[in-house]
Image (spheres, rainbow, N blue to C red):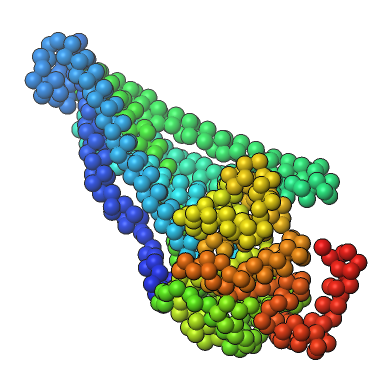
Length: 611
Ligand SMILES: Nc1ncnc2c1ncn2[C@@H]1O[C@H](COP(=O)(O)OP(=O)(O)OP(=O)(O)O)[C@@H](O)[C@H]1O
Ligand SMILES: [Mg+2]
């Protein structure tokens, strides 16, 4: 979606449209910490850059001369004819410098971590606002990587890149004038290999990052294989595909090893590049030695020069890395922007009040995907506390109706009303609180049964929980579980049977006390008698948000006609259109599709095929 297009959508009553944070905006809240970190960095460099001059002073003491650059020992007011003050000063600089270096890293790296946490929180919160249609178009693996490795890149941008960029700038600004002041000719020769080092480091860094990306994508492919195999483990076994799966896993595994080795090789390339820097020291000794013989420099000056070249080494190598880290961070930030720029196609309306429960469709036509109509021209009204049965073949549009009402699908204006108000005008929170939807394959969390039930209502009392357990015919199941309601249900509820899972999902929805309850074939794995009993119990009602016992408005989708038999009205859908409608009795009298299906269902039951 284009940025301009996104900004034209007003999100009423919802989170304000997310701004797209620039790098500067991300760091602005941390200016204080950045300033403190920079101060520590300056102190560190001042202390450590003093060491070569002190060494020079020390050699001058030994030789009884004075260095060209001026004695730091003298500047500090220490005796210039003794060695111990020099040694003590070097020791103090090294120790203090190490301490302040730690302090600068703590401050600046923490900024990176804070920025990462804040941006991740923002992206995560934004994900919660996006519509189901958006989720269908994006794969989980990609979203996960945006919230993990892309965030890491932004952290490195804030920590590593920032610290080293500042450090490099400080070291260069302080060292180059000193080195050049010592002796221009010697310095020029000694610095000659440095541009090559910078270029080499940059090329190496680029290679490292390219290969890191290859490792990450190989790791992503491997993770997907592992994840799918674990999830589909029963299918793999049932079809005896273990060997084939192992072979294809091995391909992904080999691929990861290959890329990891290539990355390790690229990392090793830093060593020879760093070695080039040592060439500068050799040149300094060569040219410096000549200068000493000519009397232009002292031995101490040459030693100082070499020490300063060593100090320039890392910042120079870092330059290449910094550029790559910044490039990668910016690329990652643009991937996060892409995510933040996505706008939900289902947005909040202004109406925020409890749902009463009158549902009405007026020529409702819903597109399930661009150009694909899932439901065409449905007109139906369900009064508060009444029951609508929705039946029809696979793909006839039953779920589409429920999903439109639950606002999981965008819905044209004026065609679907809740309490006489267009669903588009309802605040999503109010609508979701009033309209409960139970799908066929509900998702349970790896938590206790009780916490799963109380997912939407943490304040539910034990009595309320017990009541829904009974209502959904879960009593016997709960008693049979080793720890009753405190039993952990395993990932996605795997330790429960399909029928148990479905009834837990229904109970969870009921506990949130909706005024309208949408059952999307949500008892398909429960035997038909129990399904009929539960629907009948729901008709009698449950305690609603107001505290009174009330019958919810029920929209029941089922492939078993027995479940909708008692409904006030039943619509039969075919290819998104209503082909028959009426009560059970009327539909039987009509002698159409419904009557045919009912006859079949009865015969199956007589034969014992239908539970
Ligand atoms: N995301 C989608 N993209 C494209 N087509 C879709 C999408 N979701 C649903 N459809 C199509 O919309 C039509 C109606 O689907 P719907 O899920 O409402 O059927 P249903 O009556 O609930 O079927 P079932 O009994 O199998 O649950 C089907 O043809 C289906 O293929
Ligand atoms: Mg369906």
